[in-house]
Every structure is written in structure tokens, then in C-alpha cells.
Image (cartoon, rainbow, N blue to C red):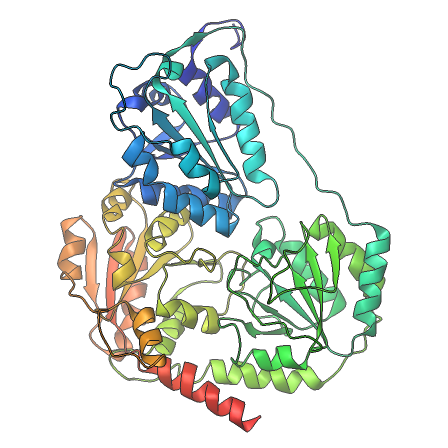
Amino acid sequence: MNNEDREMKGSDLLVAALENEGVDRIFGVPGEENLDVVESLRKSSIELVVTRHEQPAAFMAATHGRLTGRPGVALSTLGPGALNLSTGAAYGLLGGMPMVLITGQKAIHVSRQAHFQIVDVVASMKPLTKLSQQIVSASSIATVVRNAFRIAMEERPGPVHLELPEDVAAEKVSGVSVVPVHPTDLPAPSMDAVRKAAELILSAKCPLLMFGAGASRPRLAPALSEFVRRVKIPFFNTQMGKGAVGGASDYYVGTAALSERDYVHRAIDCADLIITIGHDTIEKPPFIMGRGRHQVLHIGFTPATVEEVYYPQAELIGDIAKGLDMLATETEGKLKQTTQWDGVRADILRHIGARANEDRFPLTPQRIVHDVRQVMPPDGIVALDNGMYKIWFARNYRTDVANTLLLDNALATMGAGLPSGMMAALLNPKRRVLVVAGDGGFMMNSQELETAQRLKLDLVVLVIEDHAYGMIRWKQAVDGFADAGMTFGNPDFVVYAQSYGAQGHRVTEAGGLAPTLEKAFAAGGLHLVVVPVDYSENVRVLVDELADMQQQE
């Protein structure tokens, strides 16, 4: 007897529809209104991963979408639990990460508790999702779930929210089956658009490629590398486009960790045409456009969003992989090669790599990035939280494999690093995964160490300690304000880790970080390593040194 012939509860049909979409895990904190769903999950092939707060559950679901291209799923109850998913929804929306959020609600046909715990979650989620919808009947569940996953994965990907009231979850329904999943393909750009783009490239004296957040879609990496190999145009990337093409390439000139006046902007200033691939203006600007400065060709799944800092003169829209193959066919072997880039690239990489081996203690950010790179293999994944160190990793960390440096340059929220790393470890149990978080961001979701330990993850968490909200403290100093309101105390992180059953380590000398991380990875299991940082380099390098460079020019 198939699903269409037998009577099912709404919650059973929901879970069957999720199984039909290939869902194998759901993350969250259930409540009274989800009990039918929990029971249906218990009898299914889907694992319910209970987290200690709803926010990290949403971060994990979003990271699943980011790394696989398939929506991750997070679950919460009504009211306060549902509202705790909000930051994760915004994280997925701004970051272009497909995910499905399922929240509970009181019965909608009978109200025995008046408005106890009830807020309009559907309305609150509308500006944070691509679609927010209440399921009003069990018979519609199969089509609603299929539509939710389709919308979540469509370009531009993002979150979809479904609210399932408890009486709809318990409702019996028959004659309904799941909706088959069918693949969809994006159309290729028109040949006319490809020829116009090719003419623009071939007429440029110094074209430069830029890979943005949209270039990091899991399926795109081979096509991007092949395009660079064929056209031989130098490239840089945004923070979220980092690794789209390996940094070991001879054509790599750096990462735009700042919006302007960094060393990589010397290459941008040399270009008369910037070809942006997958750029999304939701990301902090990698460069500021100036009229008459250079032309911009936008290559993307969707048309460009015109902003004050970004207004391309030409666009190539459609399936990026197909478009790049067509464009390479039109331009391969026809570009005039210039030696101008060689000196610029060498100078940029020399400055970025400076002082990476200093024996100063506490460690400089450059030394931390250097030592992390030494212990991480090419396919090792580093999941960053948000803080001052993110700029240093974006600038200095060379990536060879796509999606091996996970950072958020869209919502740029603190607290996402640990859940993101946990999801990466779940998906890649044979690869090294390292979480890098400041002491401020780590403590925002540090309770998930218990979840990581319960899941028996092999995961190393590096906490960079400065007893302050370091990035804002840096901005405060740069803007000439007094040092105030940014500092705090910390627990003994070694003991804190041990209280969760993890191993704790503290780095006490400049040469201690790399061997401590290596030892932790070799041992397996869950480890927390705390390292103090000397952030005086923030002003010396990112303010004074860059100002001197501008004056010399």
C-alpha cells in the first residue's frame, strides 16, 4: 500500500515529504506544538539533532545549504522558539543559503488557550525569507513542502518558512502522496550577449576577474577554474568568493578584505575592465566604483542589483557555468597578454605575507593565520565567526579548494562560527574542520559544545582571546573615540571545555599554536584551543601602513 492509499497524519505526510526531498537531518528545539512531528520523525529515516538554542540550529541548516546546495532544515516551536530562528533566517537570506524553517503553532480551528505564546511568526518571517506561509490543511502539505524546497533552491537561494499548527499536524488525511522531485536547469545566456561580452573583454587593455559570493555555489568550482585556465586573466575575490578558484593559481592577485585602499586595490586600480562573476551587492563592497575609472561586466545567475557603489555597464545573465564556457570559446587565445600584472601581483602577495613568522607573544593575527594554514590540509575547512580576525583570514589565508574558508560577509553576525563548523564536520567527517572564533562571538553560542560532544564530532575550536569586542574597539580607535564599553571578562576556557567533556588547551608561547592544533587533530574528538592575540597590528597594518602606501602613490 502506497502513501496515496493509506490514511496518514499531517505530521507523517510532512516527514514523508521531507524524506522525498532527501532530508537526512533536522536541527532544532521542539516544543509542545511539535510533538506529532517529533513522533513522526522518530519513526522515519530522518535524524532529529536537538540543539541547545534555536539560533544555532538555523545557522547549521543554512550552512548545510551553503555546502551542499540543498536546503538544510531547522525546527522550532511557536512564539519565542520561532523568533529565535530569526537571526539564522537573515543569515541565510543575505548569504544566499537555501534552508527551510518549520515552526509550530497552536491549533487554528479551536482556540483553548486564547493568545498564550502566540505571535504572528508568519508575518515576522516575511522580510527575512523568500516565502513565509502557514499550512492550513494536511492535504496541502505535500505540495507546500515541494514548493518550499523549490523556492529555497532557486537563484538567488535563501530561506523559506513554514508554520505547521498542531491540529493540522494531527489531522488525518488520505489520498495524498508526495510530489516527485524534478531537476531544473537555468538557461544559458544568449549568444548575442556572449559576443558583446567577448568584445568588451577583447578591447580591454587590462581586464581583471572578480569572484563574488555567487561564485561559491558548490557546483561551480570546476567551471570557474577551467575558465581561468582558458582565458588567462588575473583574478581576485570577495570575502565570500574566496576559494572559488584556488589561491595557488598563478593568476590570483588577492582577496578584497576591505572596500578600498588595501594592497589588492592596486590591481583593481590597474584594471580598465573588471569582470565580476557571481557578485552579490548584499556583500560588503569589494571595491567602490568611480565614474570613468573602469568598466564593469556583470556575469551572474540573475541581473545585477544597481547600487551607488556598483552599476555595471554590461551584463551576461543565466547559467554561469554555461555562460563562461561560451565566453571562453569566444575569447580563448585572443587576449593580449601583458606583463604589467606580474609585478603588481608579486608586490601584493609580498605585503600580505609579511611578518607571518614573528615570535611575538601574544600572537599577531598574521602568525595565527600562518600557523592555521600550516596544520590545515588543502581540503580542510575553516569556519570563521565574525570579528577582527576575519579580515586577517580573508586577506592572508590562501585557499586551494572551494568552500574551505567559511565566512559571513553579508549579515556578518557573531555566534555563527561554531554551528557552521559543526555542520561542516557532520557533512565531512573525514576532513579536518576548524572553528575560529573570538572570545566575544564564541560565548554567544558556546553552549553548542554540548551538542558537538553528543554528536561525537571530530572538531577543533580555536578561540582568539582579547577580552573585548575587538573589531568595534578597533573602529572606535580609528574614529578617534575614547576606549570605552568594549571589554569583558572570560571564563577559564580550558576548564569550560572540560566541563562539556571536551579537551581544553591554552597556547602560552609564540611557537605553541601549530603543534597544539596538530596534536588536537591527531587525537580526534572535540577540542578547544585558546590563544591570546596582539591586535596592535590592526592599526599598524590596516591603518598606518595602508595610509603610507596611498601617500607613496
